[in-house]
Image 1 (cartoon, rainbow, N blue to C red):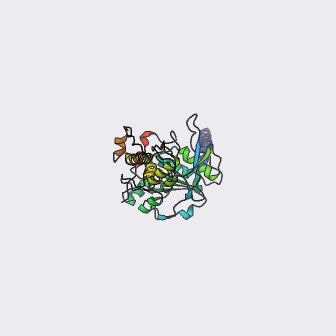
Image 2: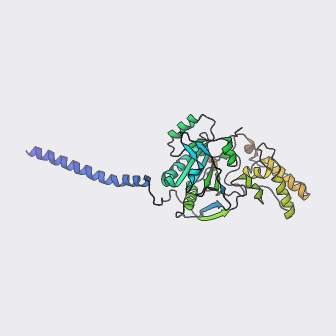
Length: 338
C-alpha cells in the first residue's frame, strides 16, 4: 500500500513538472505564431538601425511613371499580372541563381514578405539561362514564399534594361515606379521604403528626386548633368547643345544606348566617357583633356567584372554606402538577351 502511494505520488509530481515546462515554452511559441499570422495591425520594423551617426533617408521619384504592364506565368503555373498589384507595394526583383549578391538578398526578401504579408508583392524575375525547372528547384530548396517568373527580352526592355544583378524596382500602391536599386542593399533600406509607401511609422526622412534616367533611361534627356562628364566652361546654350548631341548619338561600346543613357546606365564605360569629352571639346573649341588613368579600367573592361552602375554612382538616386552592400558583394553583370 505504501509503495503504491509513493508510485502514484511520483507520477503526479512528474505530470505537474511537465505542465509547468509546457506553460513556460508556450508563450514563446505563441509569440512566433502571432508574428507569422495574418494581421491587419501595422508590422513592427524588421531591421536594425543604420550605422551610428548615419541619417536614414528614403528617396522617391517626384515624377514617377506607371510600372510597365505585363502578364506572365510563374514557375508553378500561376498567372502574374500587374493589374493585381493595385494598393500594394511591389518589389520587382531581377536576379539569377548564379549571382552571389542575388542569393545573399533572398532571405531578406523572404523575411519582408513574411512580415508584411499581403500588403506587399514580391516577384522574382529570373535571368537564368538554365531551364525553368532548375530555377524552380532552386526556389523550392531555398523556400521562396514569393513567385518567380522567367525574364524575356520584352520585359527587360519595358523596364529600361537591367545592367547588373540584382536590380529591384520599387512600385508604390498607385502602380508607379518610385525607385530602382542596383546591387545588394541593407534590409532597412527596403523596409523603410515599404513602410513609408504604406503610410506606416518610419524613422526616416522622406525626400524626392527627379528621375532623369536613374530609374528609366528614357528620361535621360531630362538630365542637366551626366556622370563624369565635365561641362565646365560651357555657356548655357553650349551645354544644351552638348546634351542634345549626347541624347541623340549612340554609344559605340555595343550597348545600343545613347551616350547620355550609357553614362547613366554604366558610368564606368570608357567609350561613352571619351566620346562625351570630345563633344564638349568640339562645342567649347578647346581640345579634350586626356582622361586620367583609372586602375579599375582593366576590371571594368573584363567580361566578368560588374559594371560601375551601382549605388555609389555620381548623381544616382539610390542610397549611398554604407546602405549599399560591401565591395565583395558588387552587382553581377546581367546577361544580354539576343
